[in-house]
Image (cartoon, rainbow, N blue to C red; front, top):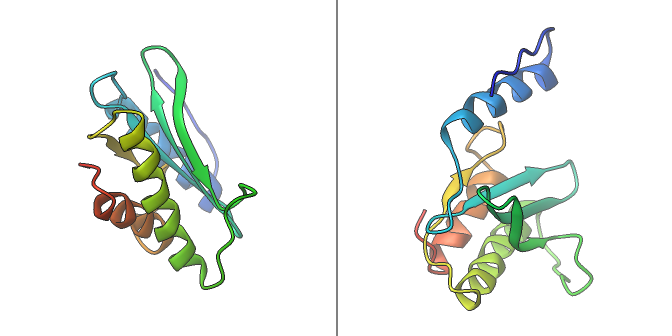
Amino acid sequence: MSVKILGKGKFVARARRHARIRKKVIGTPARPRLVVTRTNRNIIAQIVDDTKGVTLVSESTLHNDFDFQGTKTEAAKQVGLRIAEKAKAAGITAVCFDRGGNKYHGRVAAVADGAREGGLAL
């Protein structure tokens, strides 16, 4: 997978980091990939098996049953806890973490911490 991303700016830099990470982080059936997508308002987490190209479990602040009052970081931690619960119900105990080119800080780190507290091995 060779991706050449040209230009300047933070969006291009994030795309480069994401391409560099995806060369190394691959989800297998034994250890699928936990993908975190961060927008300005929401956070989305998916557990993906890359060999089949299938999303096994997903959770986000956009789901109708997600009703949380608090900061975005606290909501991200709740997303991590809830995806860990769903993953355990699906028989997944260990995942590899894909931060999506974002810095491992703030809401992205909160999702990982929540998933660890929920019982997933990252």
